Image (tube, rainbow, N blue to C red; front, side):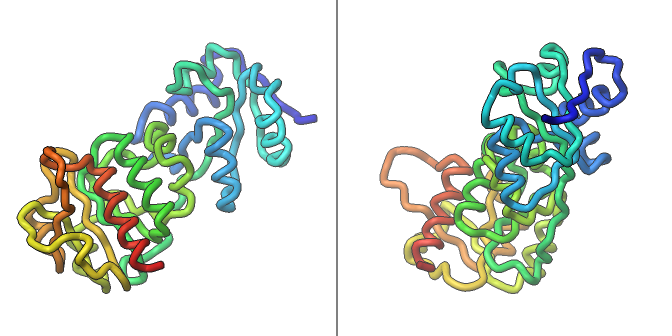
Amino acid sequence: MFAIKRISSRDNPFFKSVHKLSSSGRERREAGQTLLDGPHLLRAFLDAGGKPEHLLVNEAALQNDEVIALLGDCADVAQTQLDDALFSQLSELKTPNGLLTLAAIPSSRVEVAHAQFALLVEDIQDPGNLGSILRSAAAAGCDAVFLSPGCADAWSPKVLRAGMGGHFVLSIAESADLIKVAAEFTGKVMAASLLAEKSLYDSNLRGKLAFAIGNEGAGLSSALLDKAQQHFIIPMPGKVESLNAAAATAVCLFEAVRQRL
């Protein structure tokens, strides 16, 4: 079977270091590590060629066939069983699924000039929205996502859960200067605007393309909006003022996908 160590004390140095990672974006950035919560994220990470640094389980997980299979796939990775009380301190889920993966945060792989189909995401602060945006970007085949300093922590547990593994097939650059990114991008930067006259569906979305996505309430800053070569409006015949940022992103991305098929 597996040589699984056991930790039952909250004073254990390793547990204390992992607990800091689970609750602090600053600790994650400084350590260059994050926690993946659950079997699905670990499987997505492995499928993308990721190498876990440590696996943590609770007692119930050792009776779960899916978890046991994953532990077998990672037999060369350090594995530790935590008492239930300790494990619950690391997982934000009300009912923890029993498996956590300590993993290195990947560095961004795609330089601005080489990006083909990208997102410039400005000050998206809700973790669920950001995770959904990253999930849509991955599903649509984007190669790069650039996040402003005002965005939620892309590698926080909440964003990772909402991203459903999309993180691992994207190049994600955090704390990016989006004005500089827009200037260096060699394709067309596009942005939604309620003042635009041209519809998304009448726009040419083929070729090298980036969508600029704005904050949930304030939208795009005027500085970034000015950097976009084309503005468009998403037609909304219903009686609402605007779409949720994640929903609007998905609409834009998959209209581009439709045109490229």
